[in-house]
Image (cartoon, rainbow, N blue to C red):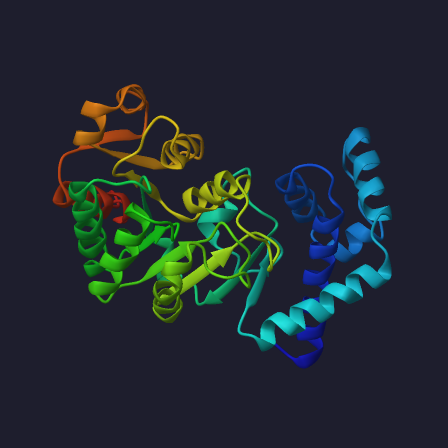
Length: 309
């Protein structure tokens, strides 16, 4: 990319951020509208057609809330982030994760430390409760280790309990792991004891956030974080989770996204919600890490071509 193209791309990114900042409804609806126009700068100039009347009215109202100086402000912010090692991706960028782009409630932007590679399209999320049992922690760590050994990228949320065991197991295998954060990318790591773990993840994968860079950990952030975890993966494994757990929410989101959901047999035996979910399409009950790895490998294997000879 030439310097001129880079400047143009940064300004497009800044226009996306300005539109998101001015959004008064769900961010993913703004993402869809920006993608349909194909340019955030054209969106701001209202250079678009083909929308329903109510969309035109809402789109113009949003565009008119953004001033030229707002875009300039975000150009400066992107430069500051780049200087501190933070990359910005928007729905207009080719490098926006392809798995995530395929879901209906994708976020309009991502902030990232580390790198997302082409191989990360083969990613599996492994999630569970913060108050895990010793058996749950052991299984989560072993499962992440086995997945990472087979070059499958392991996603989790950097939380206490199962998430911490998952990232640790993937790193122990020398594999790739991505932490989808419930805070801003520049905010202090939450929980604070996972700061050293976050640094190791950055070196061997990526830290990803959809929130403004300095956002603190708010309760509303974590359900949105689960959307991104589900979206970036080809499937979700739930190790241990109560009926009020965010991991249960992620299982529901993964099913909505048409992804595979793996429910541990021990979880299904103990939790009524897991028993109900196990009967849904794309959900499967598994009793070992070996079985999960086997099914994941089937999931990512290219389909056999029929021979006409």
